[in-house]
Length: 167
Length: 246
Image 1 (cartoon, rainbow over the protein chains, first blue to last red):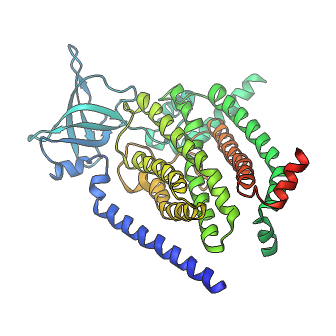
Image 2: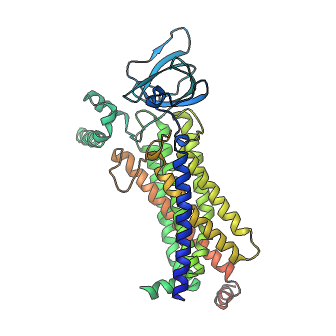
Image 3: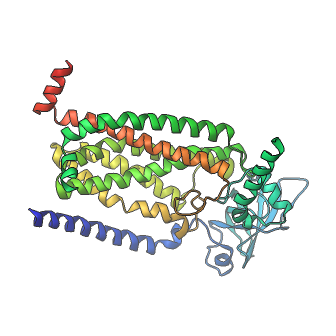
């Protein structure tokens, strides 16, 4: 009886291991297709197809956003801090769109190396914080990427100040 | 130790024990979800970028946690059922599946609703979103497969095998945001690392997660009791029980 249990256990574990390997190899083979977007480095290296709908992802470069005052036309650069790609877009941007924010641009890559966007999606990071904490961090001169390390600290300090203010 | 586990595997013993346990979990679930819900949705601070839409996190994250945990628990139950032939494990797996499917649906729906104001889209074929959708189909598949056989035992075995194989999807969901470029951001909430948000936002989330887990345990206990009565209805002890009540 014990031997039978052991046999069943081994058969099940073997089955699961085999399927896991099959799935793992499939995902490995498809890895470039599973990525939601191309990074600027990949686009500059010519890995993205021309004139077909692609997605490009990265950060909106600081100081790169120019808006046409007459229309909804906007151009900006998407960067991964190594390479950058210029994006032209005509339409309404998501609320979270701003310089230094992650975006995914859906559009067509032009032969000259810029992207004509049909749609701009905002990415956001996993760091959430109340507005007053964010303000305090900005005043203190921290860049958004340092926020995570400092947010808890500043939040506690603000709490302590508020409590002290009430007393 | 083994004797105790063996005894627990008996539907009759479990039926008596769960009767005493389940009210505690129902109470804990109501208190925790009530507290966490009101705190998170009304009193926790809004996010500096997303404003109030950030509050969806208090439903989305606990639901996504449960969706994955329930599947893992079902796979373990399937293993216990297949290797040790403990029927109670299969009854529990049967009882959990609809809740798991429901939680997966809640996670997908709340994620889509959250995606509109933040990302600007309901849906993208992003690795995290897609693997979560596959989990939903796995749940539906497990529930359907169980009912697709003439004999209950064949259905149980097929459902157990599908659950054990399908559990491979769980690490894919978890690491999808690290392995590939996705629209979905990395994990916010983890037991092993420091939270990426201040305590006043994180604490209600923790309470909600604990509340959802209590809810899962409470639902599972109660539904497993029903399943026991259904399957053991011809047994002596169930008849005695019903005789007593009626």
